[in-house]
Amino acid sequence: MRNCSLMIRFVFVVLVFVLSACKPPVQERHVSEPDPVREEFVKVNRYMQRRHQDHIAAFVKRVGWNADVTPSGLWIVVEEKGTGPRIETGNRVSYTFTSTLLDGTPVYETAEDTPKQVVIGQGGMESGVEEGLRHLRNGSRAILLIPPHLAHGNFGDGNKIPGNSVLIYRLEIKEVR
Image (tube, rainbow, N blue to C red; front, side, top):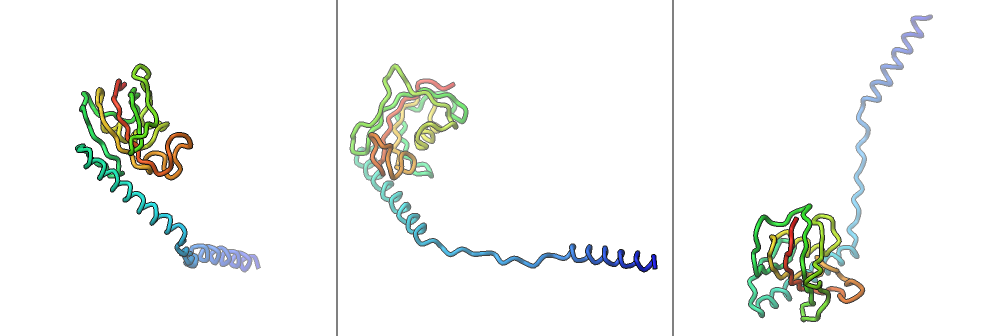
């Protein structure tokens, strides 16, 4: 009788082991339907981005600037190259700037004796400004043409910058540490 009980236990353990080793049935992946509203927003945003790039290109051509365009859509006109290595993550940068809308409307500026100070990689500025700073060196002077998706987007800053505004930043690097 004892052997029979041991045999039943053994068969039960083997059966549990065999069943647990089997692969579970394949779960069907739920494929979500495309969201037509989301797709429409994506199309509109792409259209607006192309439109802003066209406006910037026409402006740059009209004023005769020699500008480089980054993959993100930032336009950079380097007026003075500066010295030393390029600005990179972790650098503390002091710079002065004036910013205007594409039509020349003044927006913000720093005073010559009170430059703005930022640490690259920690935010606190428009992503287009940070990207532009990374292309410059100590003593550089440059003009950044920043499309809305790299600045204040569809809604502006709620103060001086309206939504969907291209910004022109004229800046000078005062110190890089």
